[in-house]
Amino acid sequence: MGRFRTFIENTDISGEFWITEDGLQEAGGDGDYNHEAYALQHIQYQVANSLDVDQSLLDNEYIDWDAIQISVVENYIDSLDEQQQLQLRQQLGIPQDEDLMDQRENIFDIAAHEAGIDDETLSMASGYGDARKYAIKHWGWKRVVDNNVETWQLTPNDMRIIANGIAEIDESLTDDTPVYIYVYSTGQSHDAMLGDLEQGRLQHAPVPQIQASPTQLAKASTQSVRNAEIEKLHPYYKDISPRSQSFPFGDWRIWSSHRIDG
Image (cartoon, rainbow, N blue to C red; front, side, top):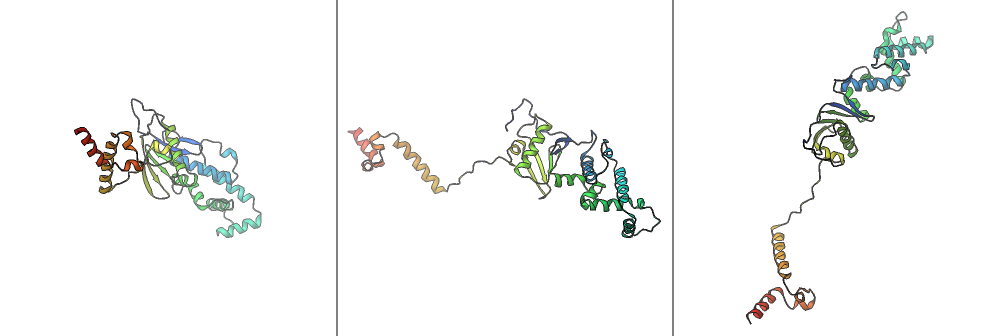
């Protein structure tokens, strides 16, 4: 969509944001979360929900990951009978007199795997790895830092999502606002204008120019002059019927000059 130009044209995007499926999220650290913290909390919520954690542990503004792990492990141990607990001790390689809660992290991993949670997601939830890249890859989130954007893919739909998110950040931005995009899946960087991204393209496609040879240019120039001269003729001589072909253009000029001289 086109934008009205203002007296003061704004092409600078200011701040840090996530563009998510739920809309725009401020992530500059001035609020509650930066990019990393916001993505990490989202991962932890997903894992906790997959493990049927008591909702009271998720109602707080900040997730207490230790409390969630303890709750999951306690529930898991309680669900095992005596024989299953013995098998668990053998699996972990611990003696009978050792408290199973001392193996909290290992047991938490076992419970998570049984719930279908993969190693990458589990590591991210525990704070290992780049939660930002995980969110970009698995959820399609777009990370915005001023005029720079990170995305996993850059399809026309991704371009429009980026453009809509940026427009929400600042409505005064013009179509000429530069956006520098890094695409994780390809490792490539792209420069684009906001107006083009709104159309689902990286840059405006100019009308292709046809390259003519010198011979073609000369022929076209001659034809142009000839057409201009023909326009001056009497309508009778403009006719392209066989009748008019008996009065070639050059002959008409000679014939015309004789009429004037006579």
